[in-house]
Image 1 (cartoon, rainbow, N blue to C red):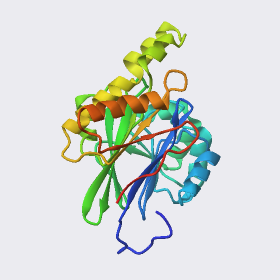
Image 2 (tube, rainbow, N blue to C red; image 1 turned 45 degrees about the horizontal axis):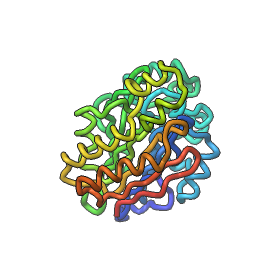
Image 3 (cartoon, rainbow, N blue to C red; image 1 turned 30 degrees about the horizontal axis):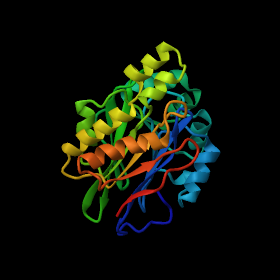
Image 4 (cartoon, one colour; image 1 turned 90 degrees about the vertical axis):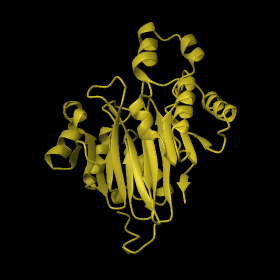
Amino acid sequence: MLSLFDDQLFMINKLSACVLGSSSSGNSTVIWNEKSSILIDCGLGPVYITEQLRELGLRIQDLDGVFITHIHSDHVNEATVRNLHKHCIPLYCPSPIEVHLLKKYRSIADAKKEQFLNVIHKSDVELDTLTIRAFEVPHDSDGGCFGYNVFGDLNGKTKKISVSTDMAEVTESALEHIADSDIIVIESNYDVEMLERSGRPKWLKDRIRVGGHLSNDQCAESILQIMNRSQVLPQMMALAHVSKQCNTNALAYDCTVSAMDKHGMSQTTVCETYPQKPSRTMSIS
């Protein structure tokens, strides 16, 4: 809980998200309001995360929880887990990935022993003023992969942020979970032509295309599908996990914005993300 706001009658008037960093080198997104803050994934180093939180006026020791999407090392940094453990910050993971996290990361096993690892089964997680819901998405990771909805009350109205930085395709279930979000963080990983020309081995190209990630075109099409089934259109959207070798922010941005403009959906602000630099702060007020 954020220590500056202890008055229970304090009115929440802003819900914000910032992608602290997103790439194959590390991923972490912070979501917060005046009373609560959480991380989705902790794949960046502890010094970097602490510094970026400080720039946003937040403190790592005040996090209400950290939610893990899957076991890949760009989403779980052992040094960061140990730092979170030192500050007694609880970790949360969906039940299918628990055993794989414990097997792969000693820091997670230590957190489990001291009861700082919480397993999400089917119910939502209530953390002070935020409600967090996990939903499954396809991605080639042991135990599966999950996105998250984060719900917050803004003066009597429920607002929704959805984060899914890794998914091979957007399933019907994922579309339903992401629909009606006020802020969306979704991956736009690769440009089809750049991947083909990249010189990567065929098995890796196939893995990226089939079981791994969304292309720019797939991301843009998915966004249109999400908007078409939404009563509430997103105010802001961040394109995450942009490949450093097989994509550029400009290509990802142009693909999504062009598709939205073509279908008369240009009211949503589209933001870029970076490997070692935070995105712009996306706020609902």
